[in-house]
Length: 362
Image (cartoon, rainbow, N blue to C red):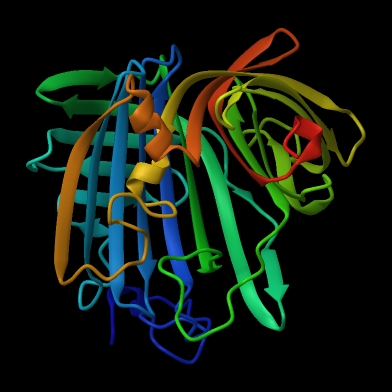
């Protein structure tokens, strides 16, 4: 099928742009978008997923207000023929200027959450190392990703209350990934299941200071052995400073007693030039993105066929510990980061499963 992307001289395989290089059902192209204020009162996370070998596009948005209420909207549709539109029901994502300006919109719907947020990049994207993993001859993961920090503007409305987004007091982050994705949707039937690890740690940080940014993405085995690592200190174009690739991460987090959520920490990053960067990490707000479909929540999981069109939405009472127990597993923490005399803001993610003795999980 010909789409508008086929007009450009950028084909990579002997097919049109509605096809990918493999028929693997796990092939996913995903967008993640984050906007939050620097005080930790408001935090919005949204995402879009395209699954060309399942003929699905889905989307979600989660908005947390003062740590008490999380508003959620989720939608799914048949991918074709509108494969070249990043739009699912009222949720849409538009590229104004590649790698510089994008817009997230949520139009009118029955679930009380709408927005229009314009993202303007502060720094060029960082391209992560390819993440590749195999188990018994089968690729579990083969993903490429880039991440970027920027400043947002616009508005969010929840339950009739509007919240203005000021680029002076709000920050934004985004990523874009594509390839064979680990844990992509409902497990395939009739094949041997993937490896279940004894223990596993995943940690991601993406943050910005006034004149630079920092990111890393690390995965470790139960004994702290590094399975994959990518990261960099990033600087604006024309400032005369080159990106510094991260080659090692030493992390020291504290956790809640009742669940595996970080309460703070200190991270030392070792760039290839040898000049270490030490960050303190202070979570300000928590957005429970499992509610948006990561690993499944209340009948909605990324990449699941729900018919030609589906939409739902709800509110979560984050003061109810039973709700927190249900929705906990993977969270986005809007954080304050300190590096020497500088203060920055961004997002941290942390997942620890099984045993991980370094943090007392045995």
